[in-house]
Image (tube, rainbow, N blue to C red; front, side):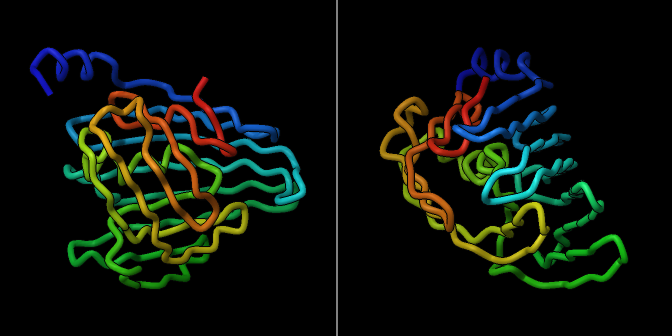
Length: 202
């Protein structure tokens, strides 16, 4: 990336990124601050009831380290009948501490994962893409992630495969996850523009 490109990219942040789901009543909006590969983000997913989930909203607060690996994620999910919270943090030994509102916690390696992915969220798919620089080069990678399901806030380790045949972001990145096998497109900073059958940026 040239100095001019870096300057132009820096001038675009902080920014609000918003996605609208394909074919279902759900949206996500997030305020993103960038400092090199470091990300600070505060966002919200709002979803009406569908056959696959009840109506809910989920707010999140994310901080990564200087490499772009997730350092801390706080999630609050609100349903009609209750509110639940989840805190996830990675320590210096790459162990993950997962705690709920009652401070019931688990400290696990989650397969050596450095990233968190949240179902229904196009934003979180950008984390490994940016951290590995996949949007800037052609490469195929397979990565473990700490995978959070909404609205029940269950956490598990899953493997997501990414494949980019060209350093041109507009050409798309192939993705294979537990819920999708598709080709996503990203912008010049690695954030998702369109994730077929999930959401598109507006």
